[in-house]
Length: 239
Image 1 (cartoon, helix red, strand yellow):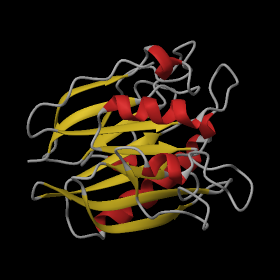
Image 2 (cartoon, rainbow, N blue to C red):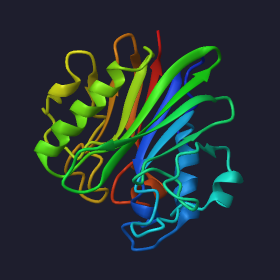
Image 3 (cartoon, one colour):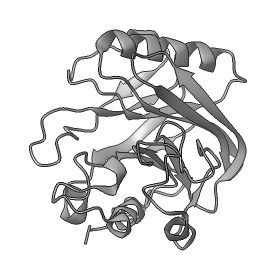
Image 4 (cartoon, helix red, strand yellow):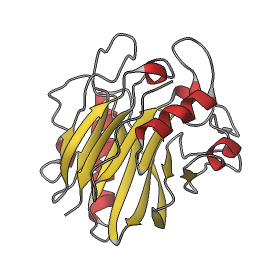
C-alpha cells in the first residue's frame, strides 16, 4: 500500500499530477486498482492524469469508469471517444466538493498527436482553472505547444490557472519561455524514472497570485511501483 499524504491545511487546494502509463507498473503488472489506490493516497482535490487511455482506437480507458465511480473521485467529461477517459490520454479527476463550470479540449502542434485539457472549476466559492498537459518529446515541439497554450490562456476569461503534467523536459533549469513572465514553473523532484529518479519530467506551473504552501512527490509503497513516473503534488492558495 501507499502511505496517504496528510490532509492539506484548511483552505489550501491540493492538486496532483501523474503519468500512470496506462496503469502498467515497473513490475510489468497492469493494475488499475493499484493505480486508483495511489491516486486516493494523494488526498488531492484535483488530479491530472497522463496516459490514461490505451493507445489504439477507440482508445479505451486504462482506468475503468466503474472503478472511478466507486472511488472518492469523478472523472470530468473529456473522453476522446465513448470509451476513453481523456483527450490524447490527458484526464482530470476531481473530488465531490469541486464544481465544474466548463471543460476544454485543445489540440497541440507536434510531430506526433498531442493535446491538452482544461477545466474551469470552483471550490468553496473560489474559481480557478486547471490545465493538463503531456508535452512532446522534441524540444522544438514543446516550445510550440507551450506557446499555443499561453495564447489560448490569454484569450480566456481571467482565472487563477495551474498547468500540471508531464512536461517531458529533462533539464532542472529549463526556462519554459512561452510561459514567462506570467507563470512560475515548479519541479517537485526527479519524478522519472520511478526506479532511478533521473529527471523532473513532471511539473506544476502557477499563474500570478497563486502561492504554494507545500509540494513534493510520492515515492513510497505502491506509488514507487505503479508507473514509471512518480506522482507529484502541491498545496496552493489561490489569492
